[in-house]
Length: 460
Image (cartoon, rainbow, N blue to C red; front, side):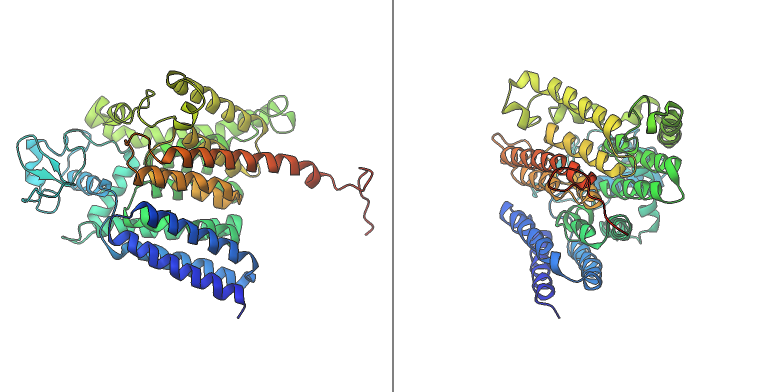
């Protein structure tokens, strides 16, 4: 047994112990940083672990770490309580977009778990008529899109009575574990380790059971379809499903259209090929999103937007709070939202014009990662998509986005002088440095040359 294998296994065991501590209680900033440091050490040590042994270590380590997330109730998020409520409401034949949890008309669906009698816990939310609930923002309707609602309903149907949060956690576990072989097939074991061993997976996807994991898996499967039998149409349909599960995966859609504007209109300058690809990806994506919304729209009308407009105001995406934190280090606050829009549009255009159609996950990572760096959200689970895309590409420097999100959330998403700002700034510098290094290395990879710059001719 090699020394590197032993060391890597020991570091993963330590990581598992730290993750266990994180899920057993509210994880402090120190635990997050320690977990990420151990993760980085494990990935670095694994560079010299032999291939077959690494395969076992990646798969076994990923499954064990994900399982650790099942050890306790959600430790740092209350979102899963809303998921459980939305599933319960739908099982009763009611649209979750119709009424908020605090509505007296839904009082018959309440139980002692989601609506406890004792309200001393500071994490509980008050109800207008008295009492309290574990569900955050109980006076507003749900924000989650239709495919997420279908997932909540499925978990409600499959979960035994009294299982509470466990059904959602097991669902998150299954989705996270299913993503691992898909990433392994696309990128190999060494890159799949970025996902398998990342502490964000057991904490956010499993323990906190965030529905973002459903969108991430669908994006991974979409890019797998590009190389499989699904082709562009299958990829488009799966990406549409990802958007219908959680809106954030829309940032992966430009990746599926990488290079569509290259040359005089597309691949090899063929405008007809470009238009065909655009339609093959775009039409299924739009149809899946539209069809998923249709049943709810027929029942709830314009209410299917849910709390999304209110959420955007609450999170200060108009330019206040801690949003656009990196840009606001460089310019007046009032400029930041507009500059963010312009920069993101330029990045999307660059992917559409210069992206690699054979590796669409690269463009998806550039857009998705840049979106988070520009908007600097205060929620760590938003970066699960970036972690999966970093595993596909092997561009490890983008994992700094996930670290920054974790720091921002732990320090308090709305806290003034949030520690996430310097971490987001460092993550942005790392991403730019990685991009510059790869750009400078491209000519050397494309054209092997001798000392005089002439192409090397190899005998056969």
